[in-house]
Amino acid sequence: MKSPFYFLVKPIGGRYTNTKQVGDKKLLLNTEIANHAFINRHAEVVSSPSAYKTDILPGDELIIHHNVFRRWHDMKGREKNSRSFIKEDLFIVTFDQIFLHKNKNKWKPLKGYCFVQPVKSESKYELNPEKPLVGKVVYGSSDIKEGDIVGFSPGDEYEFVIDEKRLYRVMDKYITMKYENKRNEETYNPSWA
Image 1 (cartoon, one colour):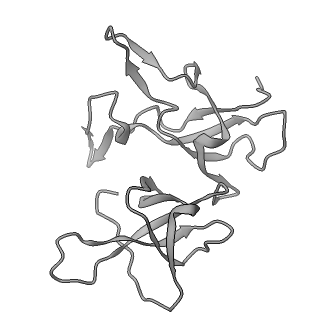
Image 2 (cartoon, one colour):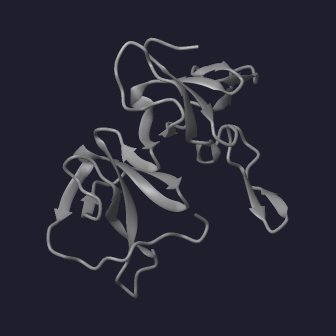
Image 3 (cartoon, rainbow, N blue to C red):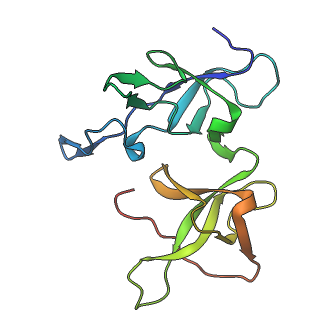
């Protein structure tokens, strides 16, 4: 099966990520289907669109929008699938729903996005362990390189856990500052990630 304009994808590890292995037991973290924080965002490409060329190929891993695999309840309480649903374990995805893709074991953000890891706060009086609105670029784009320390505007960061690191997806246009001087910022990764 191939679509002319859409990627066909399947979830990696199921539609939801609401369990965690603790020792030899499974811990259930969430029982709601609507909570976006527990919807899986990792997908494998089944087929690429035939209408245009792309470097995203079948077998590549994607980080996608949470609404692709989401289930929800309509006004009458009936459980429904997202509009991306085709059949069990097969979904359609458009380019604007893809944020990051892994090709040949290397993550690459799509044009217009970068992924930033928060940095530790230097203040011993601060309750928040991370410095607000500042981070180190882990996956950069054309203008923002990996390793750059950047600032971004509030409310424009979106949290992901990728390779056991908590990262913020930030659109390039919302990067407000690039710290040019050499800084020894230490990245912050919470234990739950």
